[in-house]
Image (tube, rainbow, N blue to C red; front, side):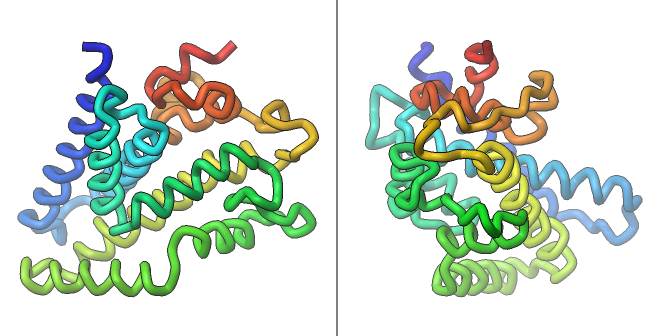
Length: 230
């Protein structure tokens, strides 16, 4: 059963995402309290981030280690649901990130002479979301919205905003914080972890705050990372 836990957890997150998105479309939120709407946006952001984390673990072969082909299929599905991204393209870049972390060959590397959050975030996004990707994403979503009669308000609150927040969350906890001081000479030891309590680490970014541990033990799935914190 231990070989299937990654798959079970991935399917739970994907199912929650699908159910939640479906419920948003059949409910009228115009009369709902603003606080409830905010909580729903944060919940959707959390699930969006979960989709990317699933894809990330699939890139390391951790969703279903006994069946790598199906493992990559789950990763592909997760990225399609997340933002219609190409799994293989991101997988190749992510493996380069692990192999050449903190060097000019690292796709996530940023010039530390100009390493402000926004400039690095902008450069990071252009690595993974080209104009063609963005055009395809918006086109598909608008077509789905048209045929499913999804309102602009729903699109803004429960698709666009959570997606943007999720990308910021992933970048902040998975790139900006841990890799600000990353350099080739010091290697993994220069990658910084943010040691939040387990619950808040989960909420923050599915334990991605334990980032040095992730680079030390890339074969460990996200939900086991707290056990490897010394």
